[in-house]
Image (cartoon, rainbow, N blue to C red; front, side):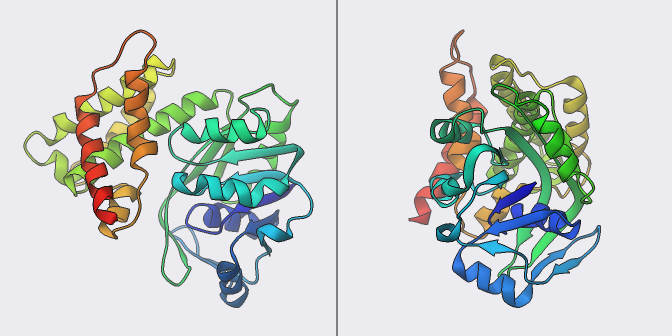
Length: 309
């Protein structure tokens, strides 16, 4: 399978790099400056599971895409989605599968409108990584996994064939029979962690060690879970127990990338991660849901955005 990875940043660069390391047919769609840096220094990954430098990885500029790819891995920030779509549209052919690893759910509507639901699979990943000023990808913890699955009319064994291609590249890759459930659970955890740590400007352990901190996180998570439940995807007990271990571990230094972005005075995905949850709570078919903690978090994030100019 010919795989096009959109960008070579913290997420796409990491997973694409591991696939390239494993001998898969991977090309990175990048801008000219990033292409020049990759040609000069290679794709560099620093990771607790093993460092690697991949010299002169295959890259392509948007204007040079001539033929479709089999799989497109999309992991841009949600606010860059429109630009990303313009850049890779020429790579989408009749049988192309797009696997988006964006936060939240709004991106699915945008991609469906452009390419059709049968082209757009559901996808979610778990990886903590960042790109430094020199273009080096830093994998921050051993966690590295993804799942994906059909949302429209199943195209035979397409998901299983993609799974077979993506497996064996150091990370866990799984074709999911219920990808929307996976995505809602990922959203529940991410929005809880991002909302709490960004609002409090502290890691999870510092929040839970403070008066009212643990009840706040539990209350925020309950509001988010109520939105998922209203959509028919209530988080499963096993998921809540497993992720609760991470959220409520004494002394946990866990934060969200949103907090790291705030500390760096960078753009954030306030609307996609938090605002869309509030929208779904307001437009619930059986009546609006009460989400005061989500509203508090959202007001805080939008006030931050207002100061960015």
